[in-house]
Every structure is written in structure tokens, then in C-alpha cells.
Amino acid sequence: MKFQCSSCGLRINSVHFKQQGLMNPKLTSICDICLQRGQDANDFANLAVQTFAQGLLYTFVGKSMADSEHDFLVNKKEHRKRYEAFIQDYDGNSLAQQQLSRHDFNAAVIASESGQTDFVPQIDLTFAENLERLGLQVNFQLNEVDYIDRERIRAKYHYRCQYCGRRGRSVDHKDPVSLSHNNDFANLILSCQECNKIKSNMPYDLFTKLNEQIKPINQKLVKYENALATLQGEFEERRRKLAATAHLKGVVNDPELNALRKQNKKLQDAIDSLASDYRELRLLREQHFMTGWKLAEEQKTPDII
Image (cartoon, rainbow, N blue to C red; front, top):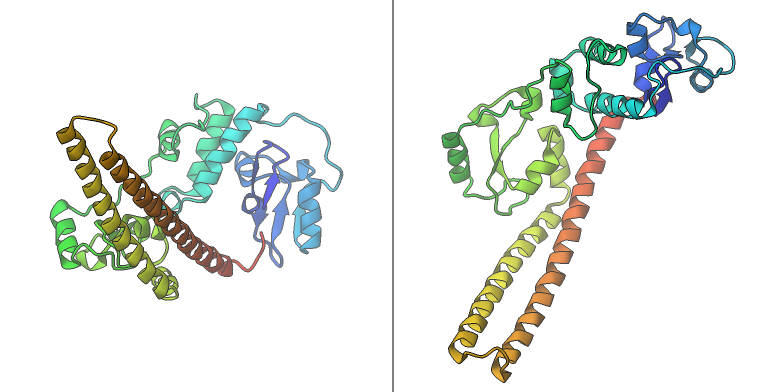
């Protein structure tokens, strides 16, 4: 859920408007960035936030009146979009939050908005690049496993993904390195590139629990991979045979060559069909993990704001 700040005009996550109260939480008419800037929420009306506060039995901090037309502190719409995307990147990045306090992050945004820093976050830059341009430092390269240890892990697991059983070369941290900073050998396991990407920063226990629920799917993935490898190998062999035959005959159009081409076309169609089914199953499996992770995260936060 997002609210629009009545001061700066940014439309950002509702967590930026929520504060702890003595009895019930409070919702403010302006965002935490503007509060840190020194502005008083009681000077601003925000009908949307006020209505939500009343419906949720929260305390509303702000003017109890309809919103009035006024210029936002960030008056360019394009700039507001840039700041909104930048703040959203921070809100969703646990690694950045570990190393960079929200207070310091907000201070950098304030300096940019006020012109103290001559830079506005750019949509076409990465989050890390925008941070650096604003004078903020976050180390996103916490993976310090050297080449020898990587090869030891690959040899230990015989180049097989320990999650799905397919061929793999990606050395994965059981407990995400972004959360644990743990590069010890005991925290390393082998995965395929796909499982490594899906797991991302997901807790190891949750990932293995979700993975355990779809064992038959993983077994099918292995069968798909093996079948495609065999068929693609056969196709390449047939393609080489066609090229060699054409070279020996010294012609392009020939009944024998055309027959070989038709056979290869049928085989390629079959491979494409199998690859399409394989891709659909992989996407379905990925959705299973993403849904399970989202549900697990939602259970941690009983409140809707």
C-alpha cells in the first residue's frame, strides 16, 4: 500500500507514514523523510491517510481537513518518479538496510531534494550506482568464495544441483551471504543457475521446505534436461551429416538432401515442443517458490500497514 506525502509529494510505501504510539500506531500526513527534514505533520492535511487511520483505529497526526492545492516540495513529476523508484529499491533491499541506516538514507534523499547534493537518482542507473552518486556506500559483493573452494564444492557434489538434481555449477550459500556474511565451506552447496536465482535471499530452511513439496516436479525436470540433451545431440549429428553429404555431392538441391532436411525439420519441431513444455514447468516451479516466500513474509507482519 502506498500513500502520497502532502509535503514532498512522493507516493511511497505506507510504512513511511507509520509510527508507534502509546496505545495504537499513528499515521502521519507526511512521510518520515519530511519529518526528518524538520517539518511538522500537524501543518499538513492528508485525507487518504486520515481516512485509513480512522478505519484502522489508528491515531492520525495532521490537519483534520480536506486537502488543499499547493506546490509539493519536489515539484517536478519526473523527479518524484525517480525518488519513488530509488526509495522503493532501498525498501526492498535487505542488504542495503543492514549496512545503511534509514536515517542516513533519508538524509541523502533530503540533501538531493534540497539541492545540497547536485544529483537526482536516475531510472537508467542501478541502485548501487545511484547510491554511490549520492555519497552512500553499500557493499553488494559479500561473496568471497575463491576458485579453489568453488571447484571443491563442484567436485564434492559431482556437478549436480542439490535442490533439483539437474546439472549445476553455481556455488550457493545455504544461509544467504547477504544476511549471514558466512562464506565458510559448511555453508556452501552446489546448485544449478536456475535454483540459485530462485533461492536468492530466501532462508535455506524455507527453500528446502518448499522444494520438498515438489519432489516429483524436480524429477521431471531432470528427465526433461536429459531428454533435451539427447535429442539436441542427435540433431547436431544429423545436421553435420547433412552438411557433409551436401559437401560430397557438391549440390544444394538433391532428393537425398531434401529427405534429410525434412527429417531434421521434424526432429527440430519435436525438440522445440519439448523445450516449450520444459520452460512452462520451470516457470510454474518458480511461481511455487515465489508464492511460498511471499506468504511466509506476509505471516511475519500481521498488520496491513
